[in-house]
Image 1 (spheres, rainbow, N blue to C red):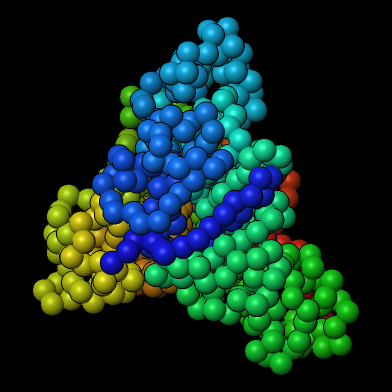
Image 2 (image 1 turned 120 degrees about the vertical axis):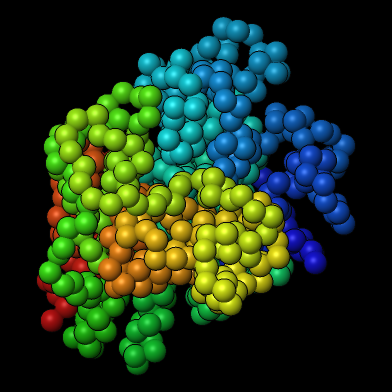
Length: 516
């Protein structure tokens, strides 16, 4: 079976192209073949021809394309070599024998653009969070600008404010080059995109064209395949099914304007209000308590001070904050993986779905992984099917797509009822719309069964959808906590933490002030 294709795709000079498609359709495979990583480093069979600026890719070694192509992989660890921050950023220029003074200036400039503090120059990569590693990888690309940018989920682990700024850099106009970007959450970059190419599950082109035309003509099909489409576009289709016809919209602001001019505003409001109803909760029963704790990563300094927090039975707690705010450290403390540096933790141990899903894998097949985790005899394939992985049962876990790996990690942790406390660290990173919806469905199911669940995420729309309560981290502590629907709409707090309001916020304002 072909991993992707046959496919014919051109990125013209100055063009910015977004590549969409369901998890496992071959997007990452396609991007890695553009500079010959596949098949020159990763063995594979390729038919047809790939050229960059008119030259066959096979004419050079993958590393020799660095002067023409700035490439960001989905997993920052695939890019970074494990040195200090300044060494990582300088590495490519050193290989090209750039003068030392020019390298030093480029490193300073790249760090400033990514807003990495100068004190990080000597910081070791191993001490960084996943999002911080992604920032360093981006800085390395900025330090030696290439005319063509190829990026696979470049901002997936970044806080919204930083992600928007860096996406603008990746997609800034390049008269002699261009950009080819894969991004499952494309709302923040859509206004910068010239053309969308959509792949189907077999890795062939389903649709291509400008964003408005593609989502308008193919939105239903894309949604059925689990491919991301803008929230406004999805809501227009939902209203149409309720007999309310509106012009196609790409943004929530456009949708609000269309609703204002519509004759059945009250009916539309009723349909939309049902979509955003919060989950009903029973009386909170604490499972884990943190009382005035200071949190520090293993062998690291204290990053959070005087945090008091609890996880309740049947409740989903969101842990939000900018990169480096201490979210992962707090989650490890909640799960009992690391002890508080000060204060008290009370409650049973929990399990963590790590940010890197490969950390969970020890077996030779996907099926063996869930069997090893303790799935009841005869129910292993059904458990995989529930996570959308039954067709991958006989594959080695490391051959899965990134989104499939993430679903497998969660399937392993939920194979039994062993863990009353579950902490999910960036569970939607690398997932398509269907994958994110699957995660949301399972989180709701597990909470309904009485698990206490914490979700570490930068995806504010996902937090709005699944979380009952949130805590916002900034400035070395918890700056806000409370019901998700209240905190997530507190613009001052959200901005202070380097986050962004959920996409749906303008529509919620419309419903409150104009809907009736």
